Length: 420
Image 1 (cartoon, rainbow, N blue to C red):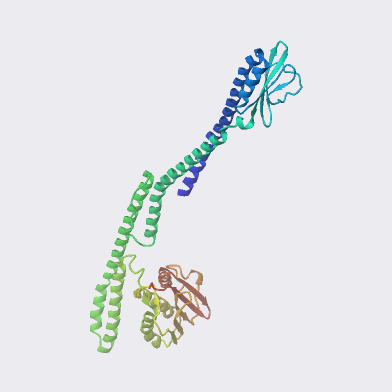
Image 2 (cartoon, helix red, strand yellow; image 1 turned 45 degrees about the vertical axis):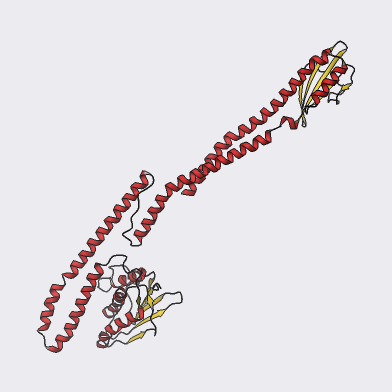
């Protein structure tokens, strides 16, 4: 926008300057020519009395004095001889009245003067250099003046455009920060009234978004907290069971209790918190595989695990990555028959990213194209599992790939590398 305003002012100023300078330059040339011709005409009129009344010797002196001014003064005497340099009239008959003849090399003024012995002719020749004397210098002054005015206009336009575009640029920067999750970003209203109004509206919108998100997080935390009451009742019921079943169910209740704590903490976590956090994909996936391995043994599922010997840092919080892996493994156990094998792998990619892969040998998905859509499921579930995995991958700067066929389903999470 700043450049467009400057170019607009440059174009407008150039048109105005051309409209002024071109007529001025033409006028300067005409004034210089008219001044030179008026001077020559005055000199010619000065010689008329001398040529008409004085003798030839006096006329010679007057002609010599006139030629010293840079113009060529000649007089053809009544006998056809020339006083001074011969003029262009030659042997032609003298004109009956004053003439002005323009040529390529200058302008010639001719004036007949009647004497007793005949007609003498005065001829004053003004060279083209005298007709244009001072014109080039004046044009240079006008050009310099126009260039100076143009530069001044561009400077003023640039400062004006800067004062107009700077508030808009700051607004765009604030909008980008808000879009990236920094809800503390605020714009400083400045510039024209319309831009200031937009800045105030953006700040109001940012505040309202923060209020809504805070209310939403607190509502989610409250809903999760309400699960503690039935969970406490369940713990009391478990305590009445025989010791063997009681210990196993108490472990499950404790795990559920920890999950509720994580849900509450996640609900109250600020939006930007954790964007720069990272975790070790090898450790997180290994821990979740060990958790699910118990159920895999009970259902007689063959489980293949491929974990690198070194840590693989990824740009995902450990809790988020664990939730995504649980969602993928939960889908395997929920939507494939018992005894179906599966494979879990963590790989480092050559472009600096990492990949977490979960593949099963099940019958495949009914609708692979819509499986990643939130809330859509072909197996009677909530349809949130794959969406959780997708959002986790995209939050890290990566993506998710899904491939399904009658021979099985493969889900690969491409995760961004954790910052150094």
